[in-house]
Length: 154
Image (cartoon, rainbow, N blue to C red; front, top):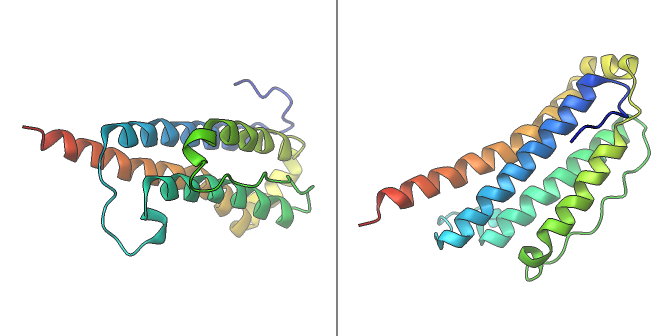
């Protein structure tokens, strides 16, 4: 991914990292799903099924972008509607591509001066950083499940 149209390399880096982490999470999610690992028992509705985990991470990514663009008075990125739970596995890659396209476009025109203002506006800056860390954190959880399940194979 090149993203040569960005006015500010720091913004470009965040968008590229967000995409990298989201793709990595999705790759690991597919591994866990294919391995037939059970969803951990928890009260967290986002861990009701592997489909709800995927929906949660994808929805959060879109929500982070919508929140940031709103607070920066940028154009609404018009995040596409998520597929429903019964369709998400089949439509995940298509949705992921649409979502990443929104990320790539929404922040491309952010100038260095605007980014400095973002850096000083801690909630916006933290939300951008959280958009990178959120899929990373969920992927970490999934990788632990993969590791644990491989250790218990007789």
